[in-house]
Image (cartoon, rainbow, N blue to C red):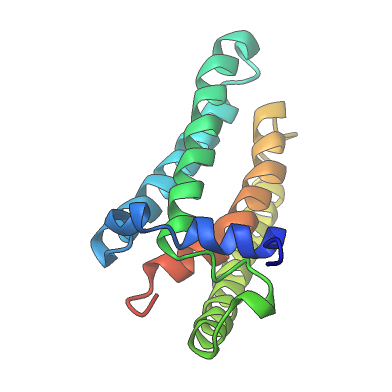
Length: 160
């Protein structure tokens, strides 16, 4: 008997029946909403980081921990189809993954255009040099959104 590979163990963990309560459309969409809320709270906290870095550090740490747990539940709710390698997926999962990545690409591109428009508006309106918090948010939030967007799109889908 062969030992299961890391990919097989990960696929089994994500397909665990204990996560069934997170696999309903309503539960997945609530998790997506919670993740969006955590990203929003993170953005707001970055705005206050310049005024009081130490006071922002604790709530920001809690938001990041909640973000990781929420993302884990979200990945379990989709059985990890947006991240597992090809040999761990069946044909239907491959199709769902392709659709999710195509949709996530369009959404991500739209968000990038909005961010660039905000930068142009900032420069045109001559609001001056942005603070450290705005710059930190402008770098980290797109990174975080880029990490979770395929999972969020997969979870939001009624077919996942």
